[in-house]
Amino acid sequence: MIKIGDKLLEAAEELERDRNIPQDEFISYVCDAIVAAYKKKVPDHDVEGVRAIFDAETGEIGIFAPKEVVEEVSNEYHEISLEEARDLIPDVTVGEVLEIEVTPTDFSAFGRIAAQTAKQLITQRLREAEKELIKKEFETRKGTCTTGQIERIEVVGNNRSNVIVNLGRVEGCMPSKEQLPGDSYRVGNRVRVYVLELRESGRVPQIIVSQAHPELVRELFELYVPEIEDGTVEIRSIAREAGFRTKIAVHSEDADVDPVGACIGTRGVRIQNVVAELRNEKIDVIRFSGDPVDYISNALSPARITTVALYEEGPETQGKRAEVIVPDDQLSLAIGRGGQNVRLAAKLTGWKIDIKSESQAGGNYKPVAGTESPKR
Image 1 (cartoon, rainbow, N blue to C red):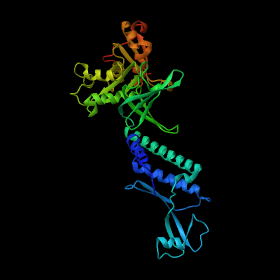
Image 2: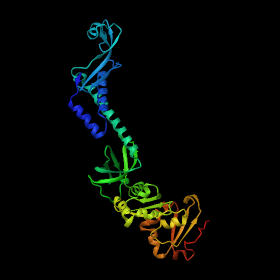
Image 3: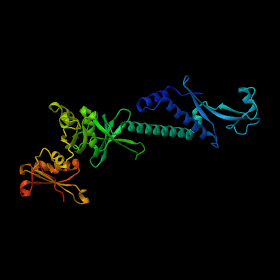
Image 4: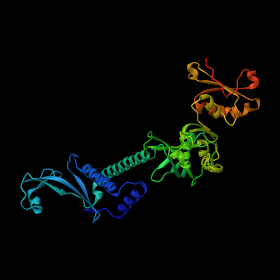
C-alpha cells in the first residue's frame, strides 16, 4: 500500500467545495488512473480484474491483481508460484486464483508514459463530472430568474464581449446579444439574469444567461407582483426591445381585481422595482382584451386612438391587419421614436398595424367606441 498524502486529500476537499464533485468520486478517479497506469506497465496490457483500493482510515491506496497459482511462473503479471502463494495461504492449491497486491514501492516505477496516462484519465473524468454538474444545475434553473456576481469580462472581438456571471456552483455566460444595450458591466457587480439555454458546442457546456430576453420581465413581475405569482393576474403577452421599452399585456378573470393597478402597485412601487432591475427600461402595462379593437387601442397607449379598423388579408400579414386613426397631435406619440411604440404594439397583439392621422384619413372614419370592425 502507498500513502497518497495529505495534498491529494486536500485537493479532493477543494474539488468538492468549489466544483461540487464528491471526495469519494474524485478518489475513485485517482484509483482508476492508477489502475490504467499499472496496465500500461504490463507488457501485453492484457490484465483483467485489476483494481485499486483506497483505505480511508490510513489514507493509503493499493493495487490488487488476480494471479493464478502455478508450479512454475511464466508470466509474473498473470501468475504466482505455488511456493509464494503458500506463504500467503498455506492450503492453497495449483489452479486457484488469488488477488495479490502488486503496488510498487515507488510510483515512479510506472514510468513517464504510464504517469501521463493516469493524468489524462483524471483530467477526462473531472471534465466529464463538471459537464454533468453543469447539466444538472441547468435543469434545475432553466427558465428561471437568478442573481449572480460578475466574475470577469471576456473580450471576443469586434466590440463584443461575454459577461461571465458566477451563479454559485457554476458559471453563466451572457453573450453580447443577451446584454442590455448601453449598460456598463463591471466585475464584482451583482446582476439578475434569466437562465436561457445550455450550449454544448465547446469542450465544456455553457449555461447561457440573459438580461435581454422578454421572459426576464415575466419573472420580475412574478417576483414583485403577488397576484401574478398566485395566478390571480395573468400575463398574456410581452413585447420587448431590451434596454429601451417593454409592453406587457395583463388580464384577470376576477372582476374585483384591476390587473394593471396590481402590476403598478401603490404609488407605483411595484413597477418601480421592476424598472430598477432593468436599468430604467420604460415599461407599459397594458390591459388585455379579447376584443382586438380594444386590445390594439390599449397597446398603442399612451396615444389616444380615434378608430381601429380590422382587415382580413393575405398570408404576408398572416391575415391580420389593423388600420388605426389617431388625432393629428397624437400621430408621433402613437408611432413612437423610430417607430418603437407601434412596432411593440404590433408584436404584443399579433396584428400588423398601420397608423394614420385624422387629416391623412380625410375624415373617412368612425370613433372607436361603438364601432364595428370592418373586414374585407
